[in-house]
Amino acid sequence: MQRLFIQLDDLPDEILIYIFKKLYNVEVLYSLMGVNQQFNRIVHDTIFTRVLYLLKYCPDDDSTFPLPDPILD
Image (cartoon, rainbow, N blue to C red; front, side, top):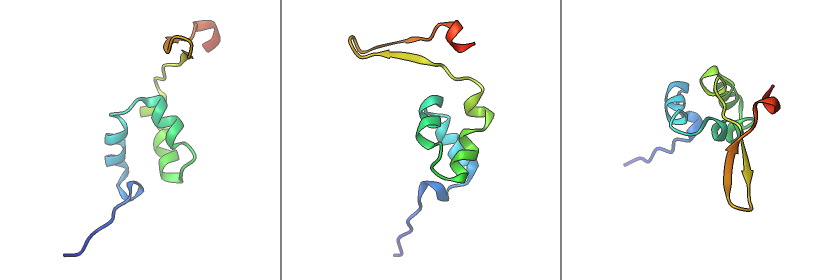
């Protein structure tokens, strides 16, 4: 039996988008931006960049909270 090795970037965009939509948009954006042209095209699509929730992390108590609106403007 012959083994096939398929890498993530061998998959078509439609399947990658389906997989990536199961993850947090910001994590997908930060993790895959700049990896290759295919991933760049996908993560810059409005599917992932239309809505981004920006949070601030406080390591003291391991909490996160939304950034205030003036920072986002």
